[in-house]
Image: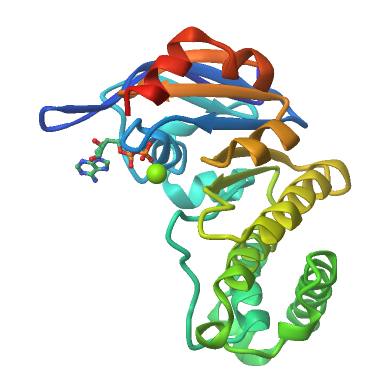
Length: 252
Ligand code: ADP
Ligand code: MG
Protein backbone atom coordinates (compact mmCIF):
# COMPACT_ATOMS: atom_id res chain seq x y z
CA UNK A 1 0.00 0.00 0.00
CA UNK A 2 1.18 3.51 -0.79
CA UNK A 3 1.90 6.11 1.87
CA UNK A 4 -0.86 8.42 0.62
CA UNK A 5 -3.52 7.07 -1.68
CA UNK A 6 -6.42 8.91 -3.31
CA UNK A 7 -8.81 6.75 -5.27
CA UNK A 8 -11.67 7.95 -7.50
CA UNK A 9 -12.09 11.15 -5.51
CA UNK A 10 -14.76 13.59 -6.70
CA UNK A 11 -15.86 16.89 -5.19
CA UNK A 12 -18.36 19.29 -6.71
CA UNK A 13 -19.20 22.82 -5.66
CA UNK A 14 -22.64 23.41 -7.15
CA UNK A 15 -22.14 23.00 -10.87
CA UNK A 16 -18.33 23.05 -10.70
CA UNK A 17 -16.53 19.72 -10.48
CA UNK A 18 -13.44 20.89 -8.58
CA UNK A 19 -11.97 17.38 -8.36
CA UNK A 20 -13.10 14.85 -10.92
CA UNK A 21 -12.64 11.13 -10.25
CA UNK A 22 -9.00 11.68 -9.31
CA UNK A 23 -6.65 8.86 -8.31
CA UNK A 24 -2.96 9.09 -7.43
CA UNK A 25 -0.61 7.89 -4.74
CA UNK A 26 2.49 9.23 -3.08
CA UNK A 27 5.26 6.94 -1.83
CA UNK A 28 7.07 7.44 1.46
CA UNK A 29 10.17 9.61 1.10
CA UNK A 30 9.36 11.21 -2.23
CA UNK A 31 8.75 14.79 -3.24
CA UNK A 32 5.58 14.77 -5.32
CA UNK A 33 4.33 17.88 -7.11
CA UNK A 34 0.89 18.80 -8.42
CA UNK A 35 0.85 21.32 -11.26
CA UNK A 36 -1.90 22.79 -13.38
CA UNK A 37 -3.57 26.02 -14.40
CA UNK A 38 -5.51 28.16 -11.92
CA UNK A 39 -8.76 26.52 -10.96
CA UNK A 40 -7.47 23.02 -11.82
CA UNK A 41 -8.40 21.77 -8.34
CA UNK A 42 -4.96 21.63 -6.74
CA UNK A 43 -5.77 23.44 -3.49
CA UNK A 44 -9.02 21.49 -3.28
CA UNK A 45 -6.97 18.26 -3.26
CA UNK A 46 -5.10 19.60 -0.22
CA UNK A 47 -8.37 20.60 1.43
CA UNK A 48 -9.69 17.09 0.84
CA UNK A 49 -6.60 15.44 2.35
CA UNK A 50 -6.76 17.85 5.32
CA UNK A 51 -10.46 16.95 5.70
CA UNK A 52 -11.65 20.54 5.33
CA UNK A 53 -13.90 19.19 2.57
CA UNK A 54 -15.80 15.93 2.23
CA UNK A 55 -15.54 14.24 -1.16
CA UNK A 56 -18.75 13.07 -2.82
CA UNK A 57 -17.10 9.76 -3.50
CA UNK A 58 -13.77 8.00 -3.44
CA UNK A 59 -11.29 7.10 -0.71
CA UNK A 60 -8.28 8.80 0.85
CA UNK A 61 -5.83 6.69 2.84
CA UNK A 62 -2.68 7.76 4.63
CA UNK A 63 -0.15 5.55 6.40
CA UNK A 64 -2.72 2.80 6.88
CA UNK A 65 -5.48 5.14 8.09
CA UNK A 66 -8.77 5.84 6.34
CA UNK A 67 -8.73 9.63 6.39
CA UNK A 68 -12.40 9.89 5.49
CA UNK A 69 -13.17 8.49 8.94
CA UNK A 70 -11.09 11.24 10.59
CA UNK A 71 -11.59 14.84 11.55
CA UNK A 72 -9.02 17.49 10.54
CA UNK A 73 -7.45 17.18 14.00
CA UNK A 74 -7.18 13.42 13.46
CA UNK A 75 -5.36 13.92 10.15
CA UNK A 76 -2.87 16.21 11.90
CA UNK A 77 -2.41 13.62 14.65
CA UNK A 78 -1.58 10.97 12.01
CA UNK A 79 1.28 13.25 10.93
CA UNK A 80 0.00 15.40 8.07
CA UNK A 81 0.92 19.10 8.18
CA UNK A 82 0.29 21.80 5.62
CA UNK A 83 1.02 25.32 4.57
CA UNK A 84 -1.53 27.57 2.90
CA UNK A 85 -1.49 29.37 -0.44
CA UNK A 86 -2.23 32.52 1.57
CA UNK A 87 0.06 32.47 4.57
CA UNK A 88 -1.81 31.67 7.78
CA UNK A 89 0.24 32.74 10.79
CA UNK A 90 -0.55 34.73 13.93
CA UNK A 91 0.56 38.17 12.73
CA UNK A 92 0.92 39.76 16.14
CA UNK A 93 2.91 36.85 17.62
CA UNK A 94 6.62 36.24 17.18
CA UNK A 95 8.18 33.55 15.01
CA UNK A 96 9.01 31.54 18.13
CA UNK A 97 5.46 31.82 19.47
CA UNK A 98 3.99 30.74 16.14
CA UNK A 99 6.19 27.65 16.14
CA UNK A 100 5.34 26.80 19.74
CA UNK A 101 1.64 26.87 18.77
CA UNK A 102 2.59 24.36 16.06
CA UNK A 103 3.85 22.05 18.81
CA UNK A 104 0.45 22.12 20.46
CA UNK A 105 -0.69 18.75 19.16
CA UNK A 106 2.12 17.13 21.16
CA UNK A 107 0.90 18.50 24.46
CA UNK A 108 -0.60 15.71 26.44
CA UNK A 109 -1.53 17.89 29.36
CA UNK A 110 -4.92 19.17 30.42
CA UNK A 111 -5.99 22.22 32.34
CA UNK A 112 -5.19 20.76 35.76
CA UNK A 113 -1.72 19.54 34.90
CA UNK A 114 -1.03 22.96 33.37
CA UNK A 115 -2.23 24.60 36.55
CA UNK A 116 -0.02 22.61 38.83
CA UNK A 117 2.80 22.57 36.30
CA UNK A 118 3.84 19.00 36.97
CA UNK A 119 7.34 17.78 36.12
CA UNK A 120 6.00 15.92 33.06
CA UNK A 121 4.49 19.12 31.68
CA UNK A 122 7.73 20.95 32.37
CA UNK A 123 9.66 18.23 30.58
CA UNK A 124 7.35 18.44 27.59
CA UNK A 125 7.69 22.22 27.44
CA UNK A 126 11.48 21.83 27.38
CA UNK A 127 11.24 19.24 24.60
CA UNK A 128 8.88 21.44 22.58
CA UNK A 129 11.18 24.40 22.97
CA UNK A 130 14.16 22.29 21.95
CA UNK A 131 12.49 21.01 18.80
CA UNK A 132 11.31 24.48 17.80
CA UNK A 133 14.82 25.86 18.24
CA UNK A 134 16.15 23.07 16.00
CA UNK A 135 13.68 24.00 13.27
CA UNK A 136 14.63 27.68 13.59
CA UNK A 137 18.28 26.72 13.11
CA UNK A 138 17.47 24.28 10.31
CA UNK A 139 15.64 26.94 8.27
CA UNK A 140 18.08 29.71 9.17
CA UNK A 141 15.48 31.80 10.99
CA UNK A 142 17.66 32.71 14.00
CA UNK A 143 17.66 36.43 13.17
CA UNK A 144 13.84 36.50 13.24
CA UNK A 145 13.19 34.33 16.33
CA UNK A 146 11.75 37.14 18.50
CA UNK A 147 10.28 39.22 15.65
CA UNK A 148 6.54 39.62 15.09
CA UNK A 149 5.22 38.09 11.87
CA UNK A 150 3.53 41.37 10.82
CA UNK A 151 6.87 43.13 10.39
CA UNK A 152 8.64 40.41 8.42
CA UNK A 153 9.36 40.47 4.69
CA UNK A 154 7.03 38.25 2.66
CA UNK A 155 9.80 35.80 1.73
CA UNK A 156 10.66 35.22 5.39
CA UNK A 157 6.99 34.69 6.28
CA UNK A 158 6.82 31.96 3.62
CA UNK A 159 9.71 30.16 5.33
CA UNK A 160 8.11 30.63 8.77
CA UNK A 161 4.93 29.07 7.39
CA UNK A 162 6.98 25.99 6.45
CA UNK A 163 8.65 26.06 9.89
CA UNK A 164 5.26 26.17 11.62
CA UNK A 165 4.16 23.07 9.71
CA UNK A 166 7.45 21.29 10.55
CA UNK A 167 6.97 22.09 14.23
CA UNK A 168 4.10 19.58 14.31
CA UNK A 169 6.70 16.88 13.52
CA UNK A 170 4.88 15.63 10.41
CA UNK A 171 5.44 12.51 8.31
CA UNK A 172 3.82 14.17 5.30
CA UNK A 173 4.16 17.87 4.53
CA UNK A 174 1.70 19.54 2.15
CA UNK A 175 3.08 22.76 0.66
CA UNK A 176 0.61 24.94 -1.26
CA UNK A 177 2.63 27.11 -3.67
CA UNK A 178 5.73 27.48 -1.49
CA UNK A 179 7.45 29.70 -4.07
CA UNK A 180 4.55 31.99 -5.01
CA UNK A 181 5.55 35.63 -4.62
CA UNK A 182 9.20 34.76 -3.96
CA UNK A 183 12.16 36.26 -5.80
CA UNK A 184 14.41 34.08 -7.93
CA UNK A 185 16.95 33.79 -5.10
CA UNK A 186 14.28 33.05 -2.51
CA UNK A 187 12.86 30.38 -4.80
CA UNK A 188 16.30 28.77 -5.05
CA UNK A 189 16.53 28.80 -1.23
CA UNK A 190 13.06 27.23 -1.00
CA UNK A 191 14.20 24.50 -3.36
CA UNK A 192 17.06 23.62 -1.01
CA UNK A 193 14.83 23.76 2.06
CA UNK A 194 12.44 21.28 0.45
CA UNK A 195 15.32 19.03 -0.53
CA UNK A 196 16.73 19.15 3.02
CA UNK A 197 13.30 18.52 4.56
CA UNK A 198 13.08 15.33 2.54
CA UNK A 199 16.71 14.19 2.79
CA UNK A 200 17.69 15.25 6.30
CA UNK A 201 14.36 15.15 8.09
CA UNK A 202 13.01 12.20 6.12
CA UNK A 203 9.65 13.88 5.57
CA UNK A 204 7.54 13.07 2.50
CA UNK A 205 6.54 16.21 0.61
CA UNK A 206 3.44 16.81 -1.51
CA UNK A 207 3.45 20.26 -3.05
CA UNK A 208 1.40 22.39 -5.38
CA UNK A 209 3.64 24.73 -7.34
CA UNK A 210 3.62 26.86 -10.48
CA UNK A 211 7.34 27.44 -10.76
CA UNK A 212 8.40 24.63 -13.11
CA UNK A 213 12.08 25.24 -12.32
CA UNK A 214 11.39 24.44 -8.67
CA UNK A 215 9.14 21.50 -9.58
CA UNK A 216 11.69 19.90 -11.91
CA UNK A 217 14.56 20.61 -9.54
CA UNK A 218 13.14 18.94 -6.49
CA UNK A 219 10.31 16.54 -7.43
CA UNK A 220 10.54 12.82 -8.09
CA UNK A 221 7.13 12.73 -9.72
CA UNK A 222 4.61 15.22 -10.97
CA UNK A 223 0.84 15.07 -11.40
CA UNK A 224 -0.54 17.53 -13.94
CA UNK A 225 -4.21 18.43 -13.43
CA UNK A 226 -6.77 20.35 -15.46
CA UNK A 227 -10.45 20.84 -14.67
CA UNK A 228 -10.16 18.66 -11.58
CA UNK A 229 -8.84 15.64 -13.46
CA UNK A 230 -5.50 13.94 -14.09
CA UNK A 231 -3.82 15.02 -17.33
CA UNK A 232 -0.49 13.27 -16.87
CA UNK A 233 1.62 11.67 -14.17
CA UNK A 234 5.32 10.85 -14.31
CA UNK A 235 8.79 12.28 -13.88
CA UNK A 236 9.12 16.05 -14.39
CA UNK A 237 10.62 15.47 -17.85
CA UNK A 238 7.83 13.08 -18.87
CA UNK A 239 5.08 15.41 -17.69
CA UNK A 240 6.57 18.55 -19.24
CA UNK A 241 6.81 16.88 -22.63
CA UNK A 242 3.31 15.37 -22.50
CA UNK A 243 1.18 16.78 -25.36
CA UNK A 244 -1.96 17.04 -23.17
CA UNK A 245 -0.01 19.10 -20.63
CA UNK A 246 1.48 21.37 -23.26
CA UNK A 247 -1.95 21.97 -24.73
CA UNK A 248 -3.54 22.72 -21.33
CA UNK A 249 -0.87 25.30 -20.59
CA UNK A 250 -1.00 26.93 -24.00
CA UNK A 251 -4.80 26.95 -23.86
CA UNK A 252 -4.84 29.03 -20.67
P1 ADP B 1 -6.29 25.59 -7.90
O1 ADP B 1 -5.74 25.51 -6.52
O2 ADP B 1 -5.82 24.52 -8.82
O3 ADP B 1 -6.09 26.95 -8.52
P2 ADP B 1 -8.85 25.25 -6.59
O4 ADP B 1 -8.71 23.90 -6.02
O5 ADP B 1 -8.67 26.40 -5.65
O6 ADP B 1 -7.88 25.41 -7.83
O7 ADP B 1 -10.27 25.39 -7.26
C1 ADP B 1 -10.81 24.42 -8.15
C2 ADP B 1 -12.22 24.85 -8.56
O8 ADP B 1 -13.10 24.72 -7.46
C3 ADP B 1 -12.31 26.29 -9.02
O9 ADP B 1 -13.26 26.37 -10.05
C4 ADP B 1 -12.80 27.01 -7.78
O10 ADP B 1 -13.49 28.17 -8.13
C5 ADP B 1 -13.68 25.96 -7.14
N1 ADP B 1 -13.71 26.08 -5.68
C6 ADP B 1 -12.68 25.85 -4.84
N2 ADP B 1 -13.05 25.99 -3.57
C7 ADP B 1 -14.36 26.33 -3.60
C8 ADP B 1 -15.34 26.62 -2.59
N3 ADP B 1 -15.03 26.58 -1.30
N4 ADP B 1 -16.59 26.93 -3.01
C9 ADP B 1 -16.92 26.96 -4.31
N5 ADP B 1 -16.06 26.69 -5.31
C10 ADP B 1 -14.79 26.40 -4.96
MG1 MG C 1 -4.62 26.85 -5.40
